[in-house]
Image 1 (tube, rainbow, N blue to C red):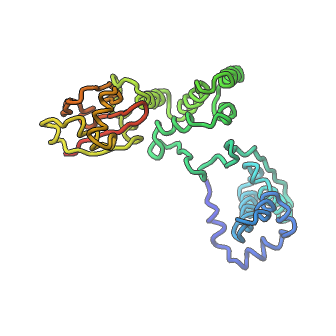
Image 2: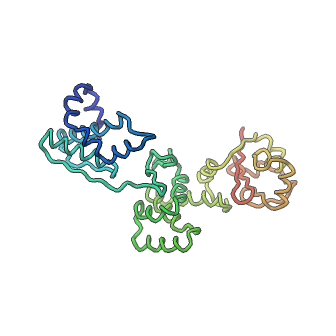
Image 3: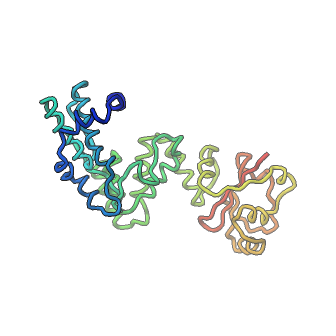
Length: 307
């Protein structure tokens, strides 16, 4: 790994203009697709800094070719203009050959770039993006992208992907292709054990049983749903479930809480509860810390105790 500040920082602006800038024609720079497209966009346009980036990237390639004998630069297709500028610069300054290899830019179905600069992108580091959220990122792939991403990001065979494509076309609501993508990608980055934990956490939020679920898996759930706090001492004497439903924000009033209980729409730790006089105690705590409340199919909240 090298840091381009090592060879760029010592340069003065006048040195850069004299030794680098004079080798570039503005006409040729403007003709590059990446520059031309930005200049035609009247709303955003292109800043001088962005326009100069081509020279900086070309200078990097030149330095690496001169000092480290680097002959090949690889990048996305949007980097084609910058890479070829570097190849031309190397030819002029060193009379040497250099090469560029570009790959199709991965985009989402809406045309946005697939990468860290886009909101909602994920990190490979589980500290920055939990395994659960990583798994959910792939589960939530747009229907229009899922087959393409199976080809890009997994090692499934052509036959396996074609079979998933067929099932997806026939019944996209089953999300078989999405689950295959999420499992394969998560297995690859985090391992099969972590993937299974993420799947269990996902099942919890779809009403799955909590038996056998580990604390680390449940902690992922806590991070995904609204959470409220209650003092542990209040549970010693028992807190009416109706009060807890209001406290958690799941129900707006006692009257609505009673109606929801009577209608069978309230779940405590994913078990249906219809008893309007039920009191919650420390015995109801999961891992001695949490109570999972649900209203209907998808409205979840967690009540966590404080000392």
